[in-house]
Length: 464
Ligand code: G6P
Image (cartoon, rainbow, N blue to C red):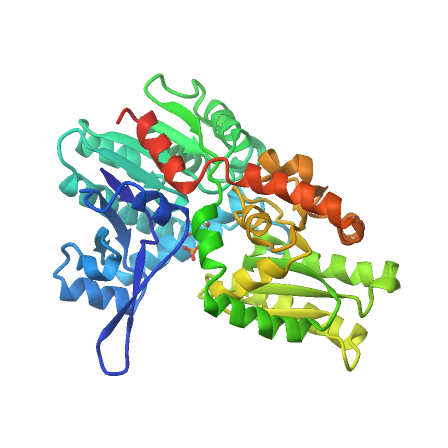
């Protein structure tokens, strides 16, 4: 069995003394794969993402990484030419495909399909080919291969041509754009992306909505639609309750809770959000909604604090950097306008600190999850599982998680700042009993398909 994804389960950093430090990543794929057991022969193929990763690949001569550094996982990292990687990852995957599937283009952020785009597209093809070739090399006869996400939309078809014996699955972790939006891509590119994924035996998505959009795009772009050889599946990845609850009660988390409690102040409610610094997450509108809450309901001033934590993401791209700066500017503006000597209305941290996020989850009275569009959004699922007292969830109807959590959340249109302010007001006002009840139901729905089962379901559906 093989897994392929751009980001692998481990990343390396070169320390000052020249040695390499391996850091293991989290996320659904990592915990899903670990469920298969320690003596699995599964190989994970991923890209080298930075200098540390490239150095690790050089030191192992391009073979499997030492398993003591990968948490037991057999990992093959591909040292793809740095310029090709940058074009494929920054240029095509995170500037074009991410924007299409999350429907993020709006003036002056317009799609540009010029000669530079075509050059980057050639790199995206080369990047996908590198994965297909490595997978073809590593796979035993009839092996199952699970290819992940929009970085690797072409790889299934390429691999199918190299190795017709394999059973290939593709999984999209993002939304899929509806045809009217998807077709802003040049026709040949739109067709290649679809036929690339249709090279798999099975194309799977996080929700029925994204799966249907994919099918609709196939009909609109390719005419005949889904070929009989490809099945469409849905697997709604859930939160890993056991891992989260155990991790959230370790000392580093309780230490951070004490720090946060001091930052929040005695007796105040907390609204928590945790995202990557990324446009689809809609952090700015969330802050504007919070500001409107303080305007419309001055009774909440001094009585609530908004913890907004953001992990820096894709900062090589100006559009993500500018967005991060805008988030910081708006938070700062709210604090200087409304703050008092004893009260900081927004506590914004732009840093990668999982323990602090878990500490915030535990303290949350309200979780704010308002993405413009999101494949699933695991934060919406994680906070109810971890929060000490149960939390209210304000949830965008455009997040995949809405399909499973919509009934017990307060649902918002992510563009509607006033509506989101109203939702925050309602959520803050929920009585303890109702909040605890709903939070319990949210946690149950959020953990219905834990990562291990999510992973095994996909394998099973491929016929293994
Ligand atoms: C989304 C994508 C993942 C990706 C993650 C982080 O969840 O679906 O494939 O790994 O974002 O983005 P990054 O660019 O840092 O890998």
